Length: 143
Image 1 (cartoon, rainbow, N blue to C red):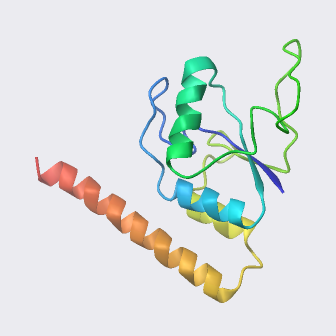
Image 2 (cartoon, rainbow, N blue to C red; image 1 turned 135 degrees about the horizontal axis):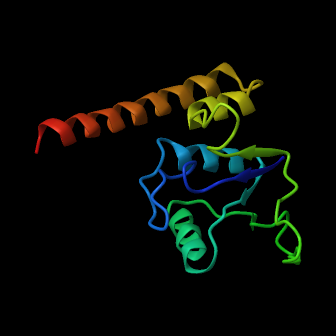
Image 3 (tube, rainbow, N blue to C red; image 1 turned 180 degrees about the vertical axis):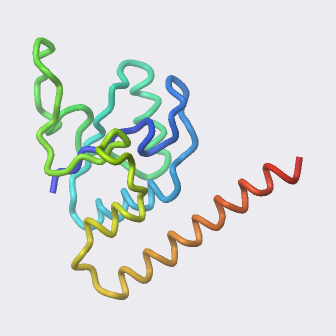
């Protein structure tokens, strides 16, 4: 599947033009989707230096995109037309109902995963959630 993924508010928290904090388990989920053979497209409003910053940030976190703001790498963009990509699925914080969370997204895309795969993912996700929560508590009480 071709999966278009937004950056701000989806992979990271909204801090545009800066790069926000990573959303819990974003990169782990994206890497697992790639390992399953899905093609990921970074689909963002960012451009120029801010787009380069986002691409570099993702690369440093182990995610290389199939294409960036394009349906396929060789696509020539006609700037007189919309740059909407032709993806099978769009992962975006602006979806109806808002952003589901990376755990829910992985579950929705892996309904046929084995029990072992689901258990492994859930265990890793819960561990990441606990780490995030503990960091939040420390930030409040350990100043």
